[in-house]
Image 1 (spheres, rainbow, N blue to C red):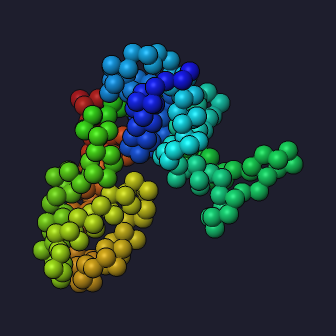
Image 2 (tube, one colour):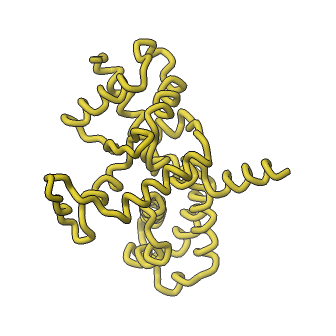
Amino acid sequence: MNYSDETVEKIIQTFDTLVNFCGMVTLDDAYAQFKEWFPEATEVDMAEDMWDDAIVASRSMEVDFRPWQDSSHEYAIHEMLYFDLYHTEDGDEVEEDEYGQPVVSPQVEGFLHALADCHDMAGRQPLSRKMMELGYTRWGLSLPEALELMEWLAERLESDYAAEDALSMVAMLITGHQNMDDASRLVYTLHALGLPEEFLGSPNLLDRMMQLFNALPSWKNNGLSAAEMYAKNQGLQA
């Protein structure tokens, strides 16, 4: 089905937002989130039609999602996961089997199946409109934990642009968390960006970083942060 350009933009924004906050999303969950964000788009009444238009649009515009499916569902997954699925660790395309089909990375495919299972257990987590409007990194930068870390870093930077440099550092940490980068590597990236070496092992730095990471949406938790997931589980146990 061919929707208007305005509707297609809303569909693309929905899928882009969901894969950035959740890593992957089923078509039904994406459709439910779309209807919550854009109830005025009454012409969109089927998840499959919405997905078909998204795939067509993705061929001519830059998007953050790609298709993937298992035995029971079709998903939109983050483009980073899709790239890793079809490329080696060296960045080369994977080989093809005797039928001309790509031999995808078993590690990444296993991760996708595990992530899908985690999402089934966590259930759908509706995202706020603010998340959609700001995007992953800008929304993360608005968190109190991010603002506190920025202030701490700015006070220790030897720079005429300490506030701007601290903002860039925290943005890097948020993106690194989204990409599941190793925390110790992120600490040394802070040093490369200008944080004096004497602060790299500071418990104050590491504690603030962990507070930020625990407040950020987790792909494993289908968009919930670790702190939100803990609170949810405690509520279920009460």
